[in-house]
Length: 342
Image (cartoon, rainbow, N blue to C red; front, side, top):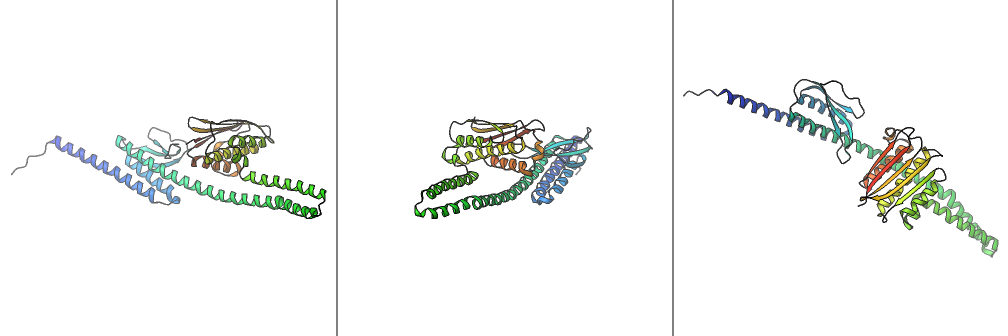
């Protein structure tokens, strides 16, 4: 029996289908291997793993080399390069770097572009998770240190101030045991002074006005205390009292903003604070006309300002909000915070 030869058109179609199937399988292998590699490596080996995935992406898409570039690295020059941003997952969409493919060797197919986009998402997610874990670990260490420092501060205040005043009051009461009016009057004065000292210590932890009178009164008291060093304008527009967690967060944000302004903006600075409930969210704007700074310089929490802003951002993000810092050397600083009211 003689078998008729295959028609050329049919053979060509089969070869095309075969090559397409091989290409799809190759893309799938690269994606699976990249996902496995990025998910299984430790934090210290993630940079090397990401570079390996970048090189795999280059081979897949017909480029000679692939690499991971930092966010602020200059882009490659020439038409034979392709740059894909690495974006952290989430609503913020922060760009944390770039996947750079160079020395194009062939034509880039649409299917390859889709595979590259997925690889960029995998790399961006892995790097963002590591960065967040490192930031949380750093903040936790700093927070524990700050907690110990706060305990030490309170202990010193209690020992050097309150304890000494209480001892003096006890001695005066002993002297007044015979009913001497002068000793009784002095004991009354010392008792009132002791109450004031205790209130100052308590205020340093959590202002009584925040619990007793609400956020607006506490903010006005905070602004009044800050006016010893800087000029402060405060505007509060709240329809109702926030829940306790949000109320505390709003107070601490303003407190930290005023502390930063007092420390860094200068004694002649004018700080404007506005807090309002608008469109289902609480919004805070803290603006000063001080010397300003480069926000990138405090992106890593080092020093008083960096740590303060890092704690502020973490507090806001825990409540589903966001913090924007608008500043430049010689142009003052503007902090914009937003927290959902729900």
